[in-house]
Length: 115
Length: 108
View 1 (tube, rainbow over the protein chains, first blue to last red):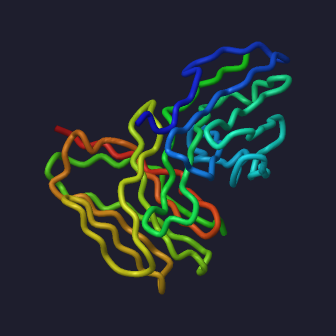
View 2 (view 1 turned 90 degrees about the vertical axis):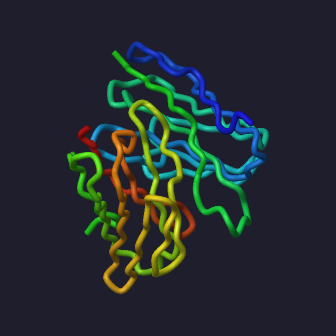
View 3 (view 1 turned 120 degrees about the vertical axis):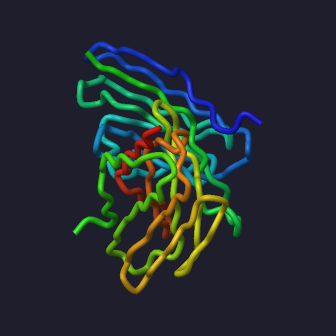
């Protein structure tokens, strides 16, 4: 199993450009999450989804959008990129209603630089 | 007071030493406690999880939860250079709240 796959691994954007960070999981997990990780700041939740067609804001949603049309995919859209969005982005998933697994499975991250 | 507090380090210890990593938290409703390990330029991976208070051991790793003190610990025995990573504590109610992580260096 591939687990959680994120693409691209690296990207440089110019200010004002847009892009979509892709995330796919093959574990049939209902819950999916997007985090950003800045040096010394820990993981901050951007958006999350509890199932196809259902999304909700996390701690830092401004400047981002998400959609969840299938169980497997949870893309993160950046509109009008700003230098403040320079970060490492992690997608994660977790099962629903599982009593033995309380953790998330993370992807390997997308390193984004906005210049 | 932040929900989860964790010393960022870095913490440098010689190979073979016992390592103690700690977090404090403020929300007494947390029931599930986790430790994630994150290698450089990788995503976090779940290392250990415990439910409520008590200890849990897995090989060289021991996770300890003291709910009365709102304090959790991760102990690493016989530390190895391969243990060098950032360790994030995490706690869960409806979502997981992460600490900022402690950078650990094991010196050969």
